Amino acid sequence: MAPKNKFSRQEMIAAAVDVVREKGIDALTAKALAAKLGVSTQPVFTCFHTIEEAKREVRKVAESMYDSYIRKGLQLPIPFLGLGMQYISFARNERELYRLMFLSQREGEDSGAIAAMKHSQELARESLIQTYHIDVDTADRYFRDMWLVVHSLATLVVTDDCPYSEQEIGEILTGFSVSLCKAIKEIPGFAENHYDRDAIFTELISRSYEKGEGI
Image 1 (cartoon, helix red, strand yellow):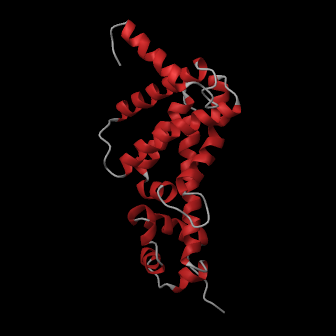
Image 2 (cartoon, helix red, strand yellow):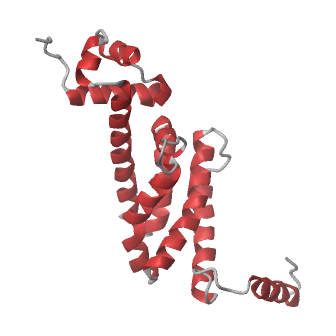
Image 3 (cartoon, one colour):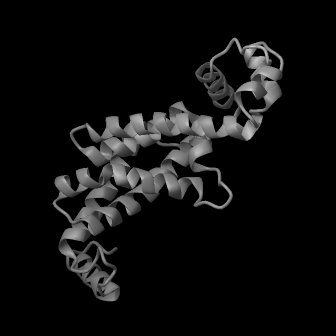
């Protein structure tokens, strides 16, 4: 009979999460996890059949933590701005977990970023419909376009290449959101991509020149 493992499965998963948070998913090996727990590798393989199983459990924890951030954002007065800022906070506070979820790819699946985007879209959809008085398809289009901006900023944060303060990030997200909402509301067919782009830009340029602003 195999000796009883002195650590519960949840304790071993928590230790695996700590290893990833400190050093990244590639650093999670049986040896690294055993060292974190102060044991040999035998208890590790008593709990997990393979180290890949441990990595899957870490991903589940990361997804749960991410969901907590996003749900908190959706409870703020401006839900999508809250979601965007919380997305970036997750990237800032949990860099390696963010890398795992959004900057890695799993074989045979959508990329981590796209899979997580679709999950986030489902969480935010109803709030967007109610806040902006739009239908499901328009809400999904709005989310996709805004997410591309949020994801870009979060990735800059994770790679230590973001020159913008939290206030400036909020202003960027607000400005883009206003522009997108205005386009959705005022340009027929915008959300469906059925509109005359040339005519819209010609009109915008004409208005600018009429005001003496140029473009």
